[in-house]
Length: 60
Image (cartoon, rainbow, N blue to C red; front, side):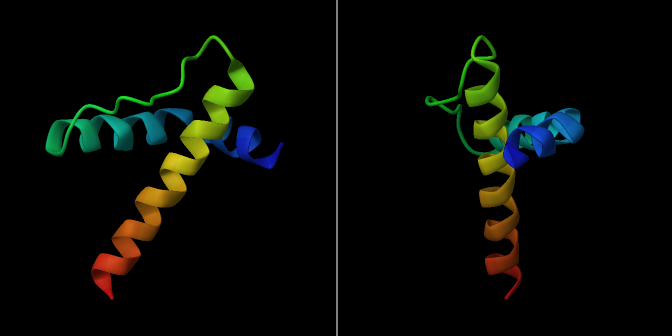
């Protein structure tokens, strides 16, 4: 899956964004567990995408 490949490549950068979000907003309750690798990296990819889109919308 492309989402898994993307999340693996940017794993630590995405985790930094997740941590920043949780520090500034709230703890995420639906965070995926690393026990299911595909689901975990897919979740990280989508979190990164949503975070990016939120920043773009705020900028516009």
